[in-house]
Image: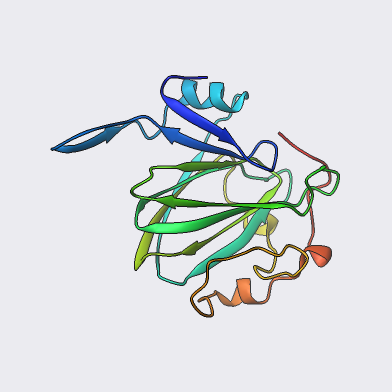
Length: 190
């Protein structure tokens, strides 16, 4: 493992909590937010990112659960640079031993955590601060024809979102099908 990153496994094989080394003092802090060599060593694969995305959302906004079908399936390295979110990855690969399982992690400007979500998983997050700036590095380009969603509150998943009230959803997310009706990647991927 790299001395630049602390990597923690989760209940879903391949989904990793990545924590860069932070150097801080009375002036503030410095961290290397991404290093290709250290990241590839941490995940045990040669992952190349092709797109960076940023979103800002208000408290209570829930985005997801989103994914893209192969051959456009995206791996995502996600982080928060302002505020905090409850970030969720769901294994929707039908032949995976962890199919239908989810993991949730707090990502914030204070803990500097990142979450690596390999291709073949759905992803979503709930903003838990007044607002949050969320960054996504993706391993495939956005392909609208391959984009799909799963309903955020599907009882088959049982995600324990830390909600204070009803979330704010897009029309697309509010109308998303449950896991049993959604199109899925056909096989596990790394």
